[in-house]
Amino acid sequence: MNKYISLISMCSMFFTGSLCFAQVSTASMQRQIATQMHAKQAEVQITLDWTQEVEMREVMLRPVRGFVHPSKIVLTTRQKTTHCRGMLIQTGQVVTPALCVRNGNWNLSKVTLAFSNGKQGIGAAGSVSVKEDVAYIKVCPKLTQGLVGVPVALTPKGKSLKEHFGDKVMNTLSSFFHSKGVVQSQHYFRPGKVHYSNSTLQVGDGILYEGKLVALVKKNIKHYRSLSEKPLAILR
Image (cartoon, one colour):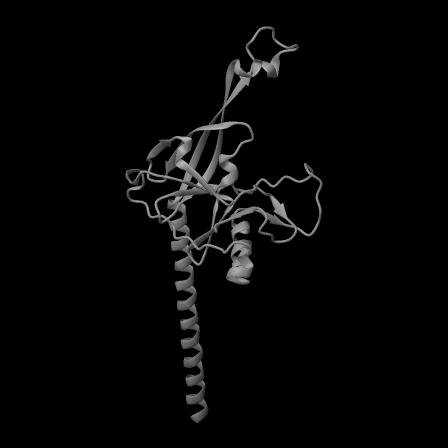
């Protein structure tokens, strides 16, 4: 009889422990889902319009005669459009990698932001400021009604994410790349020999650690051999 009572007690203890473990796992999963949903609604699609003046000196075969210097004669203006992704942060600004707003000798003329609430806003180049590897874009509050910007966790200048946040942030980074279909391989592949069709990584994707934005993707990679922060624009 005593053996029977002991067996029941042990089973009860095992069941209770399993139930607690399940509750912890469920809570952790719920937090992850909430974080992902928060990040998703904070995503911003960015369209950038560029112009470039074509001067006579760039196309002429021999020096022009007269008193007008060829550098002052503009023949035409080229135009082009690029795209990036950004994130709405708690301050009401949109952040994106600085390289998205730099394009050699092209001049940024217009920035169009498309938010997850269906609203769009257009701004001039003056609405953009750059700090380190990150560009900050001013936004009219009316455009972000119903949206909640993600909080930001800054990394001190001169420090890596791992040095500042610890080893766990690298696990977050690994999970992020995996979720985007970025392949980790210990082998070297020649360009064009392997097709990574499942990668959904985009320049400007945000990386959140413990619910806070710590970095943005600045290089669209398809695979990596060792985990690195080089493809990232770290918020400082």
